[in-house]
Length: 364
Image (cartoon, rainbow, N blue to C red; front, side, top):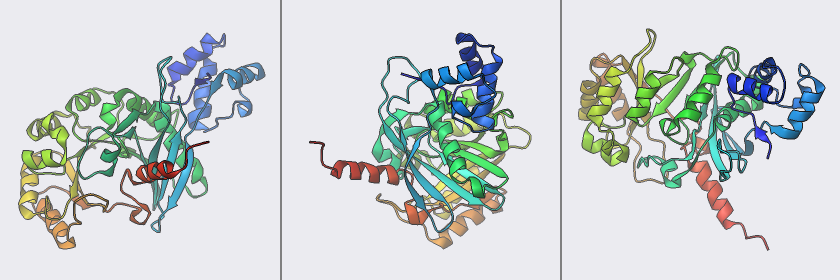
C-alpha cells in the first residue's frame, strides 16, 4: 500500500527523503509543494529530480477527501459531504480504518472565508442537542484528513477567495479526544512555511476535556480555544452534555481560569440557546457570575432546528440574554448558524448519507 504523505510534518518528510536515499532538503521541497503551493501531483513537482518523482508516484500518495455532495446556501456558504478513502485513517501499520463520511463548511464573508472542519467521523461526547451524537464515534481522523478538508475547500473556491482564511475545529467530533492528529494539522496550518495562518485565525472548540486543555496550554504554537458551555448550572449542563459528569462545570471553569492566555487573546464560550430550557434571564445572570473575572467573550448561538426535542429561542429572549451579559461587562455576540437552508446542523448530511446507503439494494 502506498505511503500516505498528506499530514506529515516537515521533519517527517525530511526523514522520509533520507530513508529514500535523498538529501533531507528534498523533504522540505515536498512540504513546500503540498502546503504552500497546494500541489499534489508528483509529476508536476519539477523542483524534484525525475527519478524521485517516479518513485514517489509508485510508492507514495497524497489523498484528498472526495466530495460526495455539495449543498450551496442562499447565504453563500457551502456544506460539503466528504468521503474519506478506506484505510487512509490509520497512522499505524497493519491497522485497518473504516471508510467514513464527514462534513465541512465553507463560509465566505467580506474580506475573509471561514472553514469549519471535522476532527472525527461521528462523536462520542453525546451532547443531547447535537445531531452528530446520533452517529456515535465512527473513528478518529488523521492529520492529513483534517488538513484535506481545508485544502479541498480552498481549491473548490479558489476563484472567489478573500485575503484571509479562518479555520475552526468545530465540525464533527471532539478535537481534544483526537489530540495528536488535530494538533499536527494545526501546526501545519499555523506554520509560516506551510498554510501560513496565524493563531488569531484558527480556533479549536472543546466540550470541556480538561486534560486536553492542559496539554494545549503547553503547546508553543496553538490555536485559540473555545469552550462549549451551553448551561449555567451543573445539573443543567449534565442534562445537555453527559461529559459534564466526568469534567464538572466548576472544575471546567477553574481550568479556564488557569489557562494561559496570550496578550491579545480571550477565551470564547459558546452557548447554544434552547428555547425554554437555558435561555432565561436567570440563566444569563448565572453565566455572568460563572465567567466573572475571566478574559472572555460569549457567542450566543440560537439553536439550529433538527430532529431533536428542543425549540428555537424567541428573538426577544436571545436579545435579553445578550443584554444581561453586556450589562455585566461580558462581551456577547449573537451567531446564527450559516446555511440553515441546506441542513446546517452538524451531522445532518452524514445521517442523510447513511439513510441513502441503507436504502440502496445490496449488490447481487
